[in-house]
Length: 433
Image 1 (cartoon, rainbow, N blue to C red):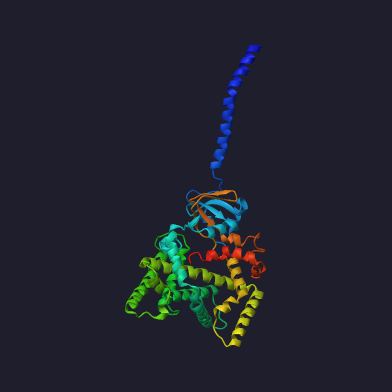
Image 2: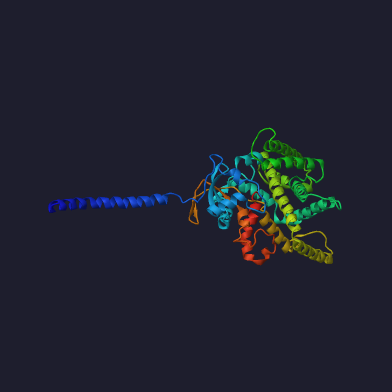
């Protein structure tokens, strides 16, 4: 090759070099921009088309476990992963920090987002499905009714009275189901406070039987065909609402004539007198509170009995605490529980906390993401469903020593940690209250 030819090639290369460098620069920056724009979603899979992984996620498991699905997914993907559940793309969180963030930012970053089948059976005005201002209004009606003054002066004595009714019904040396007795106790207590219905009366017992059928449908697959639990539950819902509506109409008549009794100062009366809710809204409110108050409380009571049966030391300490309170009251010539007695039950509260932690009365709640945000390097997209799974946090060995062991004394060891973890235990219980 001649010198002139070589120089010609070099000149051509030098001429092409700037455009090539510019193209390379633009390409590198374009790749960076694309990577930056593409969300860094948590790892995971979507499962089957349309069905996703819902059936595997809802597979029954022990209350004291997080279930095989969660164990496998956390082991594979970590404490935050993505899936397809309940027909929607979903972020699943077993992370204590993210779960706390979700609970503490209701209405700002997240809102309730339960499946449509829930509104179909609990009603479109149920607090479980309402969002925004209407949810806040319903919630305030319930909270104002259950004020501190009412809790101290009325509800606490009612709890004691209903407990005595249950204990007196037991026959010596006869077997009974703790779960059934807990359900009967909590239903009667809720029916009394919601509609002034007295335990043992035919109307109350009829309502309780309908409610049992109703509950079987709430926790079943939403298949609205004759004979299915969901179909039967919808019929029971209609019967329950007719009972409530009948009492509501009776109350309207008494109020118009000034004949309402003091003992009828219940949630029904409060909603009629203190709110501008429609009849349909009041019906759904009462039904949803009957559901919320009964299910969580009865399950917690039954679980407490189950756990205590295997922990004689805790039973002994509970007895000693209660006997000390009873002795102090006896010396003062007092009878009946009061608010000061309740505040002195420190170890009792530890037993309650541990029961809720290990028993996982509320395993998870449904939320929808309102704004994009990042957490631990992951992008959480607006519009996705997010499920904070409390059972996974409650059984996390990095948070609790020997998490599968019933140990109420753990709540006495680190008070600062207790206050943070109680957010993850108590807030889900108040999901609809």
